[in-house]
Structure formats: C-alpha cells, structure tokens
Image (cartoon, rainbow, N blue to C red; front, side, top):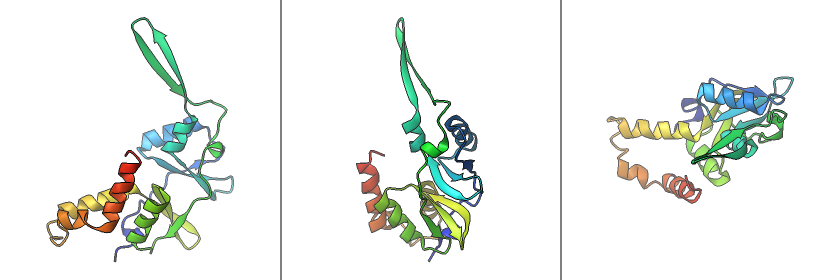
Length: 169
C-alpha cells in the first residue's frame, strides 16, 4: 500500500494572508504552481490560495480598438490573499493511503491537500501528483500487472474521469 509520503511534494512555497493578490499570483507563476498555502503572522497555516481563487479576483475590461479588441485583466491592488483564500484547510497525515486521498479529492472536488506529520505541515499533494504517479505506472515495464486496461477500469479512475468530465476539465 502506497502512502502520501511517496507522492507528495515536500517543497512548500507559501504566502502570507496580508500579501497582495498580484504578488501571490507572481509567486505562483514563477514557481509554476497552482496552490499556495497561506500563513498568518505567526507562520501558522490558515488557508490555501488556488489559481481558481485568483480567477474570481481578476478584474477584466474589454478595450475596443479599431479593427480589434483586447482584454485587459488585473488585480485590484487593495485586495489581499486573506479575502480570497479557502479556509479551513483539510490535511491528511503523510501515512494516509493514496486511494483514501484520491477518493476525498473526487468526493469534495478539491484538487489539493496539505500533508501533515503530527502537528507539522510537511508537504502538499495535488491532482497533478496523482497524474504523475499514474504516468509512472503506465511507463513502468516492471509493473506489468498495471496494464492500461486494468488501470482505466479501476473504479477510482472511472469516478475521477467522470468527475473531471462533468466539471468540464
């Protein structure tokens, strides 16, 4: 049985709750990530900011020019991470079986969880981590029992596929 400790990302990139949305967005772009754990002034995790949260905050404007139009999108400079983050953050212990976390992602329609070891946050796991794990199994010749047909016919893959399809992803 594989646990989260084998699948999670242990390099946490964080932001603070009073940071501007524009700075949080830049941090996500620079690091090519879609989720930022949010810390309070005591460096305690109080939320998570996702790329979807940022989409809700974008202010867009269509600028019409002769012969074409341009969409301008930016963040209100007065808005901060705290106003858009998701809270409270659900965590899983690093010894949790992977299938339990995947089932929770599907059921709750959440694309990442923070990973704990006791009281400490030690990592993050996202749907992308699970896709990388699936790709590993698909490419691993030693895992011959994991044929593509067998993988695609497992209930959790079918459920995940249906959920993603219904969500338009």
